[in-house]
Image (tube, rainbow, N blue to C red; front, side, top):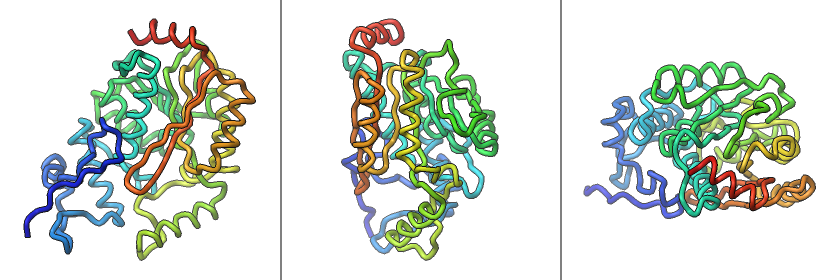
Length: 315
């Protein structure tokens, strides 16, 4: 049967490398370990079993080598396996956010400093952001095993090692405090917060997704440790605390941002933004296939401060 032409994914960001269906043959050349997971489906197309965490991990390794020059990437069993196209979309839309305050031009280079809250064992946002835009990153994480794995990724990728700085959050009740230093400035922060409010809610969410994907197991291929999936009060409380803490660093960061999984959380969160008197906020909509997502961005800088920031940091 003739091989089908790659199908475009029209909803991804225009600069996203993953608009077309995966060229698995080319990816397997970049990472030969992917080859054992490739098979031909009933439509005559090459694919992998996306319910198999080993296959998804191999695909990620291939994508990171092929598109982002990440020579080594791995995560321990049970940790979150991030979908690369969606993670890349967040980075590209963040670049647009910076460009909107820089005469439409995306600021590039290590002079742009980003802070990733909860980078996890996978370190995916800093790797993509540095590869595509050469941004510098501080990657904050609370869990020692996740930090240890992220450090191994950096140690085996010397090209990224000096551009990504890992920091441990020692206080589990804080987000920015203890991470942002008094003499430090960030052009943006980013975060993929824990969505659920309890372990039981996270388990039920996994079961629903498994059912929707017609999986035999309740275990999703993307995995996830407890701190990656849930926290007391869930996404609403976590991002709410992030907003409160951001007010203490209002002059040290241009854009604070966080992904928002539940659309219903937007209204109470924007109300909190008004309470802390932000200068401006935006809700940026994204979509990957049938899945819709968004992130919330806010700044305390007024127009003149924004102009000066762009002039002195990005030119």
